[in-house]
Length: 137
Length: 137
DNA sequence: TTTGACGATGCAACCCGGTTGCAAAGTCAA
DNA sequence: TTGACTTTGCAACCGGGTTGCATCGTCAAA
Image 1 (cartoon, rainbow over the protein chains, first blue to last red):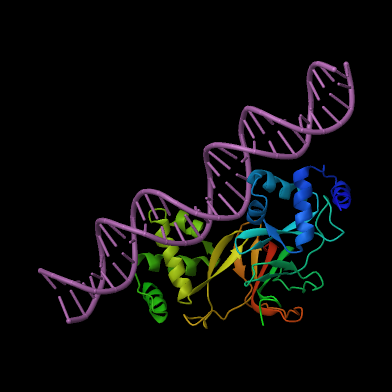
Image 2 (cartoon, helix red, strand yellow; image 1 turned 180 degrees about the horizontal axis):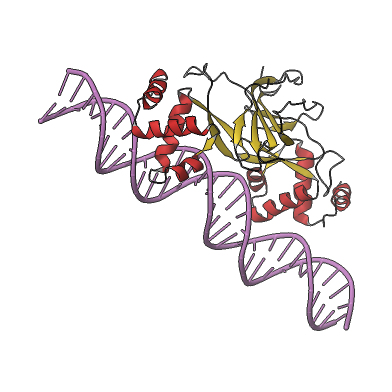
């Protein structure tokens, strides 16, 4: 499916290089979030900085979004409606303390929050931690 | 009120040293969360490791709790019912992108979350980001 | 086909928060 | 006073994240 990944990149205005295709396909295949460290381990031949900049490019162009999970940032593919204009798929994420995977709870709605008078809400960072179905039990 | 801080420490089984009293009083006075970095700046004469261990001791003994805000951990005083046995004051926190202060929204209730089948929830990390009443406007 | 511009890559180095080992200093009770 | 235990200070380290810079690849204009 190299073709479709290239298209995917093109749709977000990202020049498709070998590295970028590899990273994108890894994210597509893997279905869970990946951190810079994971990518470093996966693509041990290539450079940290390149991977870092690849992720940053993807994020800027609205292809993935970063979630901070206890100190490190993991990246997940965005749903359709994100672009360079902004990220619009705000939803909770679940971090499994067993397998250390992070998954989107895209179907879960973000609850409403009542802030004190005069407060202005821009962003909600919601991480649920526990064990996934495979690790619980 | 040195006396009351000492009592505060004693209640949690913490030996009251000069450093610990200073840090506790700083936390009491300041009313917002403090990071290790902030403490380093505030008590620039003293050592990072000491401050670090002070915070860790406080946390372990249930006097403060740490909240991860975009990469760095900030610490806030706990409400009454925390101890070495565990932390029981789960609530959202608000991080102001203007003044970089973190405050407890202790009055706000943690919403319920519906997880997929078989998932096990242990901990909720909820950070609201935006501007506080002083920084908005 | 050559040249030049620009983007992508690799390498090295750095920053910063967090953390640990170890020796010195302090505390306290026997 | 001694010895055990705790706290502190110093130094060093670790890992994630980030940047500067030189090199390389690509592509289009000359």
